[in-house]
Image (cartoon, rainbow, N blue to C red):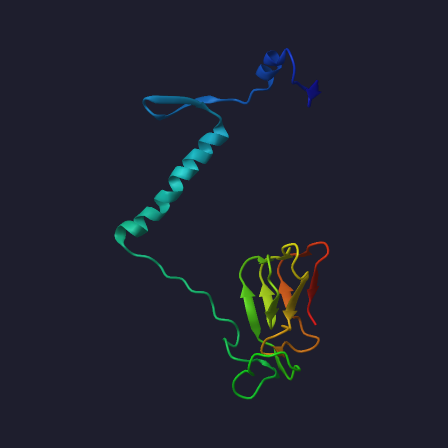
Length: 179
């Protein structure tokens, strides 16, 4: 039997010699000599060099603290919409009276909805992908923007309630609601 012109049965030795990658002798330690392919040597050298690049900063005892740039307009309790006067209303499941167009849930990577997750209230921004695959036997619905029981302050009608930088994937038989 052959695959790609290489015999996988008897007589394999001769064909293997013809297709062998170039190798060379590499001695990492004087007492240990190994035959290693060039890509492996490069990977070993890279793996050994990376920790050494951080060594001088730790040896001197200095470290740089980095912070992200603030969001435009800063963080605040509410971006009109129709903000509640003063504090947010108490938790409940009454009528939606107020609208808040601020980002309420920010995810810097991927957002994975798993197990028994039910909802995220307010505007949701995900830099990566949104993936919903909840456990079997639980509600197949995940709410974004409007929670069944919450402050009942949602993003404005017609605005983006879920924004992603990647894909949105919903498991078969499950639903994502943003209403």
